[in-house]
Figure (tube, rainbow, N blue to C red):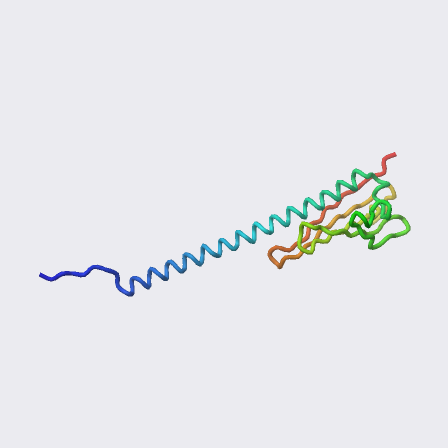
Length: 150
């Protein structure tokens, strides 16, 4: 009688190792994609919250509070007036601490259509930009109008 030795051949072992390597590579790529996606969502949420906070601040201040004025946008509160026009419009910048290199801008202007400017309507644009490489960097912008109600 002949005894047969049971076991795996070298070719079978190599095939199993190759299949496991391909599977683990795919799983690790999905893990990395999940981490990047989660980080991007966190940063987008932080940027959206920062923009909403500024928009609500401006809307609650009303028409007269939407002016580029050092008394309204104090440097002690983290604001820097970038441009101040004679008609109290312009641009203000602010830092966003929750984001890497987070920088925000507030643009205040009178609403302008192609046919004219409305002196009783202000156009507010709040933008937050942050870095983090191509997959996790970005920009969020909100735009609203504030009317002067008599």
